[in-house]
Amino acid sequence: GVGMIYVFALSSIAVYGVILGGWASNNKYSFLGGLRSSAQLIAYELPLGLGILGVVLAAGSLDLGDIVRAQAETGIWFVLAQPLGFFVFVVAAFAEAARLPFDLPECEQELIGGYHTEYSGMKLLLFLVAEFLHMITAAFLIVLLFFGGWHFWGLPGVPEASWWAALLRVGVLLGKVGCVILFFMVVRWSWPRFRFDQLMTLAWKVML
Image 1 (cartoon, rainbow, N blue to C red):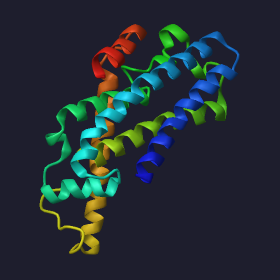
Image 2 (cartoon, rainbow, N blue to C red):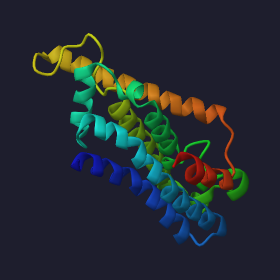
Image 3 (spheres, one colour):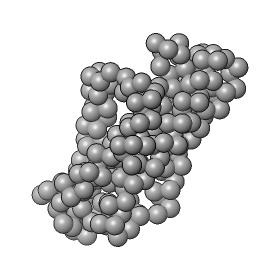
Image 4 (cartoon, helix red, strand yellow):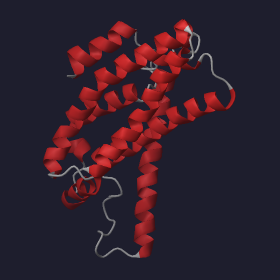
């Protein structure tokens, strides 16, 4: 449970940084980007938590290790047992990470650059690195919660695992995370951006 809370706290720090950075730069476009980010954060935190609820109930624990072990013991990943929760969590994770089609805080067609309009150099780099770290964190969570984490059919379990099997499980985990990040990139290249009213309607009237 502590691990889950820690991961969510880390994933939210970047968004709070966007809000404060947009407000502190004394620019109307940046301020609008910060306001959009705060509204988006509040709206999609609720579906994000509700998407995990079925997984937590099925595993009987908030611990990420226990959730992975529950999938490994049954051999059925939660993406198959909880498809609706998976869909809700993935869409909310896209919105939380402010990736297309949910990148309203930095919408360059309307807000020039959004929250980082006034930033350059190392400060801009920190904003962009935080955005990519948010995406990687979301990818790890999707894999651990819904795709079995390190589990793959045919791999030996934890008690009888040797060092090569442990390395193989690490490779399986990283391979799954890489596939999810590739999915993030494909969606970014494929989907047009939502309008802001569509973004809020999706969160409050559809996702919940």
